Amino acid sequence: MTTVLNYKDTMIENFHTIYPNHMNRHDTLFGGQTLYWLDDVQGLVIRRYTHLPFFTASIDTYQFLDVVHRHEALIIRSYISRVGTRSVEIFAELSAFNHETRKTRLVGICFSTFAINRETKLEEPLPQVEYTDEISKFVSSSYSDRQSGKLTAREFCKEYLKYYNR
Image (cartoon, rainbow, N blue to C red):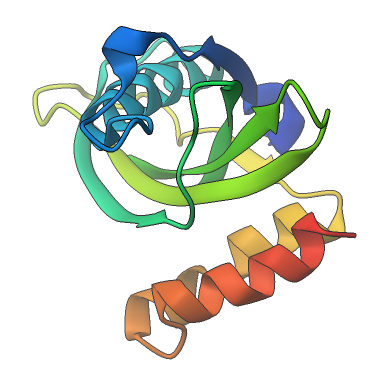
């Protein structure tokens, strides 16, 4: 029997305060720091999803859409967006929360693949994930088009922004 989880059951949302040591020479958040936090959050998604020994196989695409300033906080919201036989795709939405204006804006999106070690024998299929709202259905259903090149990362971002700004 295959287990089915709601995508929200795999979601992790994490807030990061931006300090001076996180800044680059342009006085915006250093991209390497963003990727460090991103991998950490996506690792938590996997641990929430299963106890199996997954590892980060690849960051498939990361789109820096805007910079993050010192007076903002970085919010990373991430969840399983596709389940394969021995790997999963994890989606992350990165937003900046401006403490002065009290507004949030999209600053990045990421798709990563996490895989199971070859030595690990699966006794049952990986739990499946269901998507229950428009935005998660869009993210999940875009997999084939993204993989085939029909939907570029930039085009995905434009479409995603339509859902994000609703």
